[in-house]
Image 1 (spheres, one colour):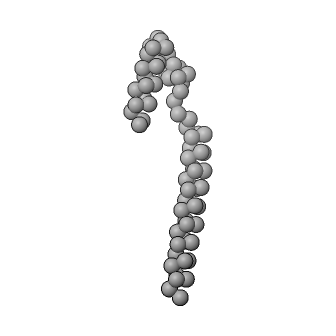
Image 2 (cartoon, helix red, strand yellow):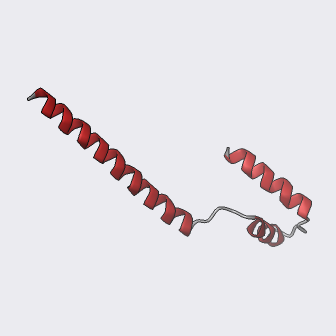
Image 3 (tube, helix red, strand yellow):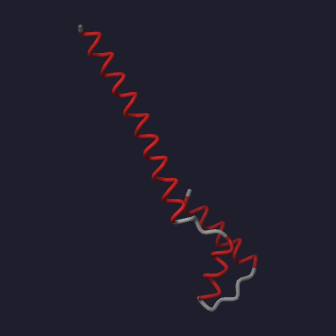
Length: 71
């Protein structure tokens, strides 16, 4: 009788983890679709809107800084 409760508990835990994983994965996929991460072209457009002349060196520096900050 006790082993049945343990088995049901373990199975419920595994099902919960699997469902949680797939729900979180679906949520993140839809979030990234709505809010894509910033790429070089977006950064270049933002710099132009701020009145800066974007050079490739400056864009690379800013991308490296953003990547370093996100890690």
